[in-house]
Image (cartoon, each protein chain N blue to C red):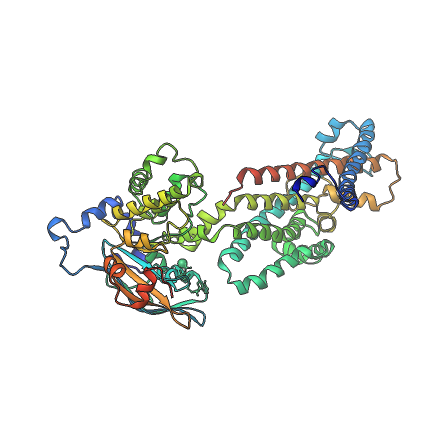
Length: 304
Length: 293
Ligand SMILES: Nc1ncnc2c1ncn2[C@@H]1O[C@H](COP(=O)(O)OP(=O)(O)OP(=O)(O)O)[C@@H](O)[C@H]1O
Ligand SMILES: [Mg+2]
């Protein structure tokens, strides 16, 4: 038999085609859902902007959704969110990076296999528990004795920032450690062979080579901190205000959404609609962070 | 020259002058140069060295003398412990948690295994070039300047980078692109960059672990020519699987093999010509003639 007898035309069995359709459909579900959510957010937000001017919304610094006179300056909520996230990062970045360096280059294999899972367990603690921990331990046992009752209350951006910081530390540590460990051993050895100390190897070779993963981990952690709800709902109070004072009680965007959604807000009311405007703003912020993160990874990636 | 190997004063190793130029000056001047029949001067001496990974003995009771300003080739079948031995000389294997060694390695009369010796200081005097070129993901300039910087070099870095690249026969290839990544170079160029980087620290001994095994024949020849050039100022120990390379490029050859227990040991060492043409041991003869048994 000659090979010419075998047809060169396309022939695919039915099962192949069914699988393809199924795969396409499941991918489509994700895309459609996301688009649906964005569509609803945008639609309701536009409805909200019929009543409240977008300029007032995006530039105003007073927020009062339920108590008259009402005010719709989202910056009050944005500042609460940013303040808590900033405090969280101030705690989590150094802590997470030190942990990553320790695990990647200092810890013995035995220590690493014990410590890493423990660290990752912290990330798995239900955030409501962390919020509870903030209210019942961090504020009364730590912050108030340290700063004085007159200077800080039971609810503060600081308390919220600390627990969110604890929450995102493992995220930074884990992703950064992965990218530090991905730096080839040969590269480390090259530096050691020239008489670099361990710390010099970490600082001058491993860290720069892993920088894209490290930055990505920080941005991811930032976006996680901004989106965090339950811990801050309990810890920071419910006082929307435009401030950078960490000892103040504030309200974050997520906490506002949770509080209003849980309350008895009538559907179709202006408060209800404001949820979507705040939600869309939040969505926009995290979207921008994710885009930056993707860009950073591409820009700084080192090919080994 | 007689730099301490203990912690404190090591930094002066690199600070005492404009790098390689000084070394030239410290070499014996014309009249004092060793003549053919004078006993060769040994820079490194391994005395009864054994190496262990945990309970496994990878190398046993090795005695090797490494002559100054010469190329010593280490040959032997795969797994006989050549790399292990090489990485013991610059205490690189201290980084392997299960690793341990016994015996003595004398460098200029100091025992590298002595308690007070700092491995970091050892590596500043005993450089290493690896099998796979491993430039840092930094610019070519930064790659060469790295070693001197961590060694606290105080002189003119630009000059040192240039001299080192010239010595590694790479200057003409890269002089217009010092700001490009070291990883953008070809394999052979990367390996010469790694040699330049090693020279920049101005070591006394350069260890090379199969430095050409990832390179094409032309780059290999370039590296061999370079080694012949470099031995005038440095002492070189090279591990190679390439018999022609060992025969061509080295002055002394050490043949190792391993026993039943997989522990490597030295069978025979001597002038390269003798090892290849007139070995004393049957094992050596079989190995160098390709009848590997
Ligand atoms: N990090 C390590 N941990 C445990 N055993 C090791 C380690 N490195 C090497 N060995 C073992 O030590 C022995 C010698 O290995 P080594 O790499 O020194 O051989 P080699 O002569 O360089 O071989 P090759 O020619 O293949 O490079 C081998 O049996 C190897 O399995
Ligand atoms: Mg080897």
